[in-house]
Length: 114
Image (cartoon, rainbow, N blue to C red; front, side):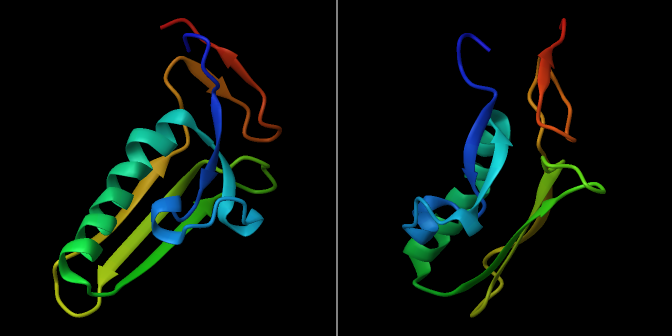
């Protein structure tokens, strides 16, 4: 896509929430669109809520794999604020990229006509 990479080293729990950049247990292979704008939008909502309220948030991110595939089909993000009802979501984000067909078994890809 215009000389950009298909895949990013995607943080499961965003850097802005952990401050960890190289924790292998917090990284996955994700497409650019999985990472930004899709995951980033929800991470920004959490960061904004935390900054505004100084409350706590229970947060879970789970990559979803099919059978023995090496690349996740997507991620499930769940968040719930603890002290109030100010933040709550449970979403699934597909690990796809427009213009590409991904082989989730080995991570290879090919460009497809739009």
